[in-house]
Image (cartoon, rainbow, N blue to C red; front, side, top):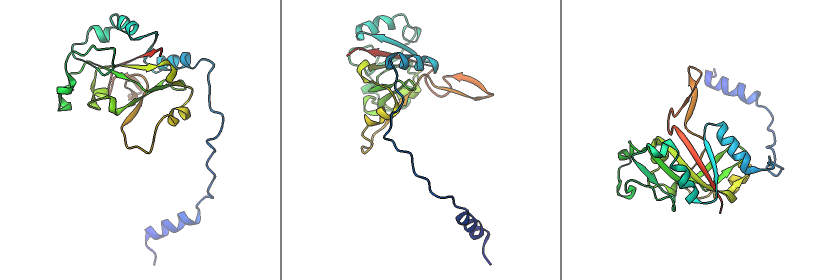
Length: 198
C-alpha cells in the first residue's frame, strides 16, 4: 500500500504540465523619449523627490532649503564633493551606533527611468545598515547613467561577483497596515535624488 506522500507525488507527476519555452530576452524593451524626465516623474510617483543639477555645488545650495538636511544633527556623506558629515563614520565599528543617524548621503551608480530606481553598490557604504536606518536618504546619480529600463540596468552589473547592492526607489513604504499607505515604515522616511550632470 502506497503512503499518502507517494500517492500525492504520483498524482503530481501524472498531471505535470508540458514545459514551456522561456521568453527571449533579445527584444525591444521599453524606451522613453526623455529618460531623465521619466526617471524624475517615476521617483515622485513613489514618494521621492528629484532635482536635476549642474554640479554638486548646486546640490549643496538646494540642500540648505530642504528640511531633512537643515533639521539633521547626525549626517554621514559618502559623496565626494558633498562633504557634509557631522562625524567620522570610519571610527564607527559597531553599526548599532548608527541608530540615531538622521541623514545618509550616498552615491548611486545608475538610475532606471522605467521605475525611478537607483542602484547603490554596497562597497560605497562602510555599514550597509546606514541606508536602512537613516531617517532620510539623499542619493546622487550621474545624468549620463540613467538607463531606460531594468534590462539595461542589469547589463551594468556583474552578477558573477559576490557583492552587496540594492535598487532603491523612493522612501520606505508599506500599504499592508489596515490598507493604508505608511511612509517610512521600515526605513527612510524620505528619499531625495540629485541627478548630476557629468
